[in-house]
Image (cartoon, rainbow, N blue to C red; front, side):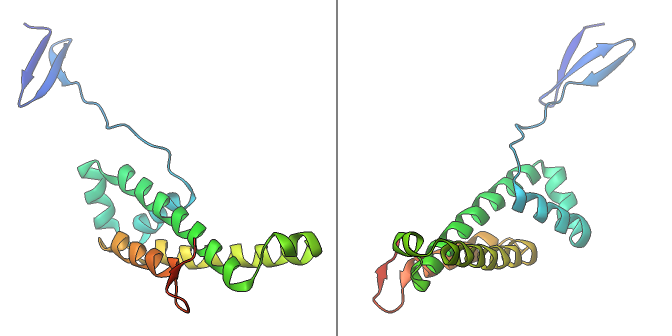
Length: 148
């Protein structure tokens, strides 16, 4: 008997009297906070969709994309809110405690928005919605200029 055989694009190795497939998982990337939260949401509320992503081997990639998009969204929202509320280095130099309080408030607000988007937007159109939201945040509605 041959040690290795190939059938249907899969290589099999002989171990004892039986052939076992030599399978490799795609490269797994590190999943961040929002990717893990979305994974928990999928496991609890969207079991079929979670299983299909898992079987296709695209779950990790999808979670990484969601995490990246969510972090970009978070940064954009924080930038926008600091601009709208006038929180800048001048305030930081004048009143450090107020600046810290304002930044903590802004960060908490931005995280709440992102959590709502990541956890409750589970459709395939998530990236479309997030990209539209990001582009809307980048445009100053009063002056029609880019803020960033």
